[in-house]
Length: 120
Image 1 (cartoon, helix red, strand yellow):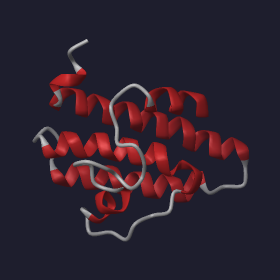
Image 2: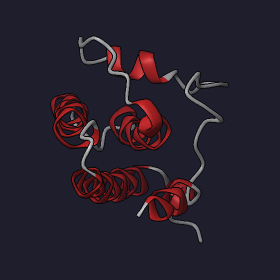
Image 3: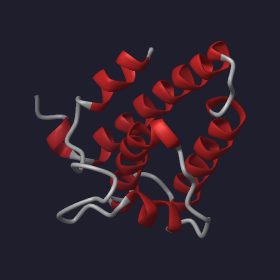
Image 4: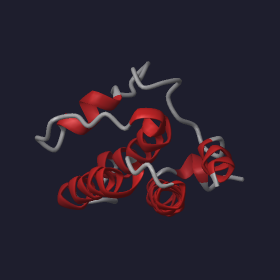
């Protein structure tokens, strides 16, 4: 299942890493946009960042309301706390499957707002 997250992560243009770059905000800055303390997603930080960044692009381009963007981030944090930190591999697999669904949703939001993702 982690391979699917890696596959999705490579599908669209994203910043080089968690620190952002160019005009892309860092992961911490994206999390702080909703007034919350940044969450340490451990080994899952990069795919969570990519999902958050895609949702941010949709938000910035007016296709995803701010409250929905913040709810998306809150859900990521809550599911990670509940599932992603478990010592049970089956529970962590549930987290990865759910994260893949969220990543696909974020890509869809971004594609609706970013014409460069529809040009292929």
